[in-house]
Length: 70
Image (cartoon, rainbow, N blue to C red; front, side, top):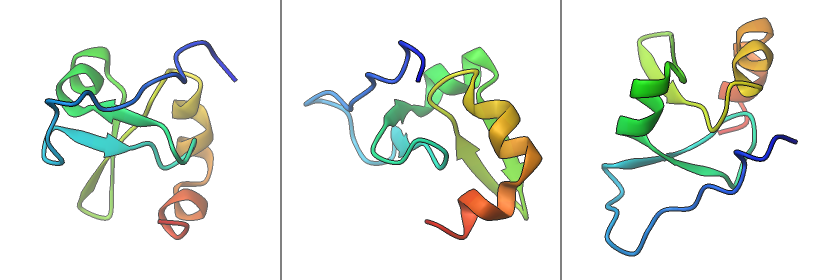
């Protein structure tokens, strides 16, 4: 687990601004931050926001595994 996995929405963050990482369930990320860091994947027309760079290769290797768990 990387040190970036301590993400949580702030009290002022709205549901539209945050998303749960599909790889590390329970970790929430700011969508704008994830976009800026390249931590977004598209799969079957949907965007998925990742909490850290370590989640990218895991999601890329088997996106269906993580999408079906949502």
